[in-house]
Length: 519
Ligand code: ADP
Ligand code: MG
Image 1 (cartoon, rainbow, N blue to C red):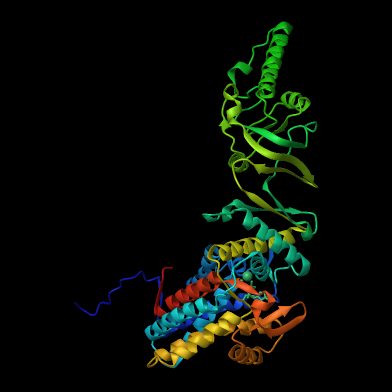
Image 2: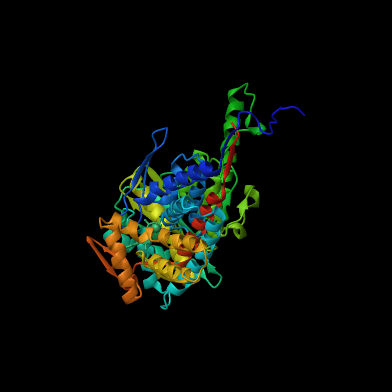
C-alpha cells in the first residue's frame, strides 16, 4: 500500500469539522431566533415578508415568519422546526420557544469558549430543563380555569397581533364561546371549530356562527335566500340532460324529429325537476350541474339549490347535517335527507356565502372573521387560530401559569438555586440555562422600550418579595405586578412545550461537530 490517499466521500462534498462546525451551526441558529425577537409580546412589532412572486404577508406570528423565510441552513432549519412543533403541539408560544432556543445556543457558545465540553453542556441543559418543568408545575395557578380565565388566556395570546383594545376583548369572548361549544366529556373537539374569513367590515363584526360557512351561491336568483328547519338532499347527480349521454345525441333529418327530440329533452328535464320537488327536500346540494330549466322550476317550488358544490364543502355539509349522499335520483328518499335549523345564502360584495346553522349531526361552529383588508383578516385569522388553540389547551389541562415573563423569572430562579448543588463544570451549563430563560422578560422589556437590564433587576426583586412578578403592559402603561391579577396568563402546556422543544433543538445543534454536505 503506497502513499495513495483513500477517498471515502465524493470529492465535491464539503466538510466542516470541530469548532468551526459548531460555531457556524450556533451562529445560524442564533440568527434565526434573532429574526423573531422583536415580535415578542404585546408591543412586539410586525414583519412584512415579501416572497419572490411579490406576495406580501404581514405578521407577528413566530411560526409564520419562520415558515415564510426561505431558511436553508440545516441548523437554522432546526430552530424553525422548534417553532413548527410548538405550533402543532400547543398552537402558541412559537416566538418564545425560538427565542429561548437561540439564547441556549448563545450561552452554549460562551461555554465552549470557556472549554466546557459539548457533552457537559448537553447534560447540564437537560438537567436544567427538568428543573424548569418542576418550576412550571409550581407556577400553575390554584384558581379553577373558568370562562373568565379562559378569556384572559385568549386575550394574552392575541396581544400585539393587531387586535388591540376592545376588539381583543370581544374576540376573546367569541373564542371562548366557540371552544365551550365543542367541549364535551371527552374533551375539546378543537377540529369542530373552523375559521372563515370575509373581508369588508371592521373586525368588531367578527361573530360566531353555530354551524358552517361555505362559499356557494344559489343556482337561481328566484330561489329563497333562507330556509328554516331545512331538509337537505345531497346529490352526486347532474340535473339536466347528461352531456356525455348517448341518448342525448340525435340524428335529425326532419322538423318532426327535431321537435320530438326537444320534447323528449324537455320531459326528461321536467322529470328531474319533479322528482326532486316531490321528494320533499327544501334544500338541494349537488356536486354536478343543474340545468337552467330545472333551477327555474325548483325556484318556483321554493326550493333552494346549490350546484357544483366542491367536494370539501359537500363533505362539511354532510357531516354537519347528517345527509346521505345519493348517486341516482331514483334512489332519493327522505331517509337520506340531512337536517339543519337554518340554511341561508348571503352576498358579501364579490362573494356569495351559504350558512348552514344548527346542523343535526355535528356540533361544528365557525368563527366568522371580518376585517377591512386581506392582510387584516389574514393576521386576525392567525391570532384567532392561536387563541382557539390556547383556550382549548388551557381548558383541557385546566392549568395556566402567569405570563408577562413571570414564569420565566420563576424558572430561572429555581434553576439557579438548584445549580448550587451541582458539581463541576456542569453547574456552569445549568446556570447558563437560567440565563437563557431571562431573555424572555428581557425581550418583553426591550420591546416595550424599557431598559432590559433594569427591568430584569426590578423583576427579580419583585419576584423575591412578592413571589410572582411580570412586566405587564396595559395600553400605554408598563408596570411590574402580579400577572394573575392583571389577567395575563398563558397555558402551562405552552411553557412546558417551549422549554422542551427549545432544549432539544439547542442540545442537538451543540452536539454536532462534523458537517458533511453533498454538493
Ligand atoms: P409567542 O409567539 O411566544 O406566543 P407573543 O408575541 O404572543 O409570542 O408573546 C407572548 C408573550 O407575551 C407571553 O410571554 C405572554 O405572557 C406575554 N404577554 C401577553 N400579554 C401581555 C401583557 N398584557 N403584558 C405583558 N406580557 C404579555
Ligand atoms: Mg402568542
